Image (spheres, rainbow, N blue to C red):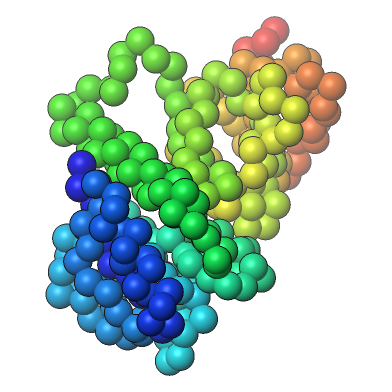
Length: 250
């Protein structure tokens, strides 16, 4: 797989270094280098084949974060991803919000750069495999469990649905509690968006902030469920479908 990419940085030395790194990686193809985000945006519109942008964050007129937000709001969101390059570490949260593939803190070396490029290759390879499976109308591997992908710490993590215990929504973030994992997976999405990805036969929303795996419920009352050692209340609008579910237990 070849990934057409661009480099954007308003510092000539940094821009030249990124370009030289790109040219040393066999699966990256440099389609252009730009000293400002406005010129890069024009190139992105003119060349829809571009898949990856190495973006400096602090630039005049239009910052790298602002350009990433424009990309996310366009039809290019899944086709074009970004890797941030910056001398300032305070933008890590912003880069996470715009779903950057990685965040390189200057000064970085070729090893750091090649690891970030490898993440991009993994991402686009996965997207290509999913597309082929959809076109063929068959799952990627028929013997595997059902699964979803979650964006966790700048990478896509494959999570088997059968391993999910319950999910907790926290405003812009979601915690996914998984069997045999000491800590929950934290992903930047909403509970509603994640709910739409889950099969109704396996998961049920019982609270404004909680979705539970039906198979993992240990015990129930009319107002709560227990999963492992955790007790979760059933509230408001979610009580009726929950009561229908527990009526089958008797």
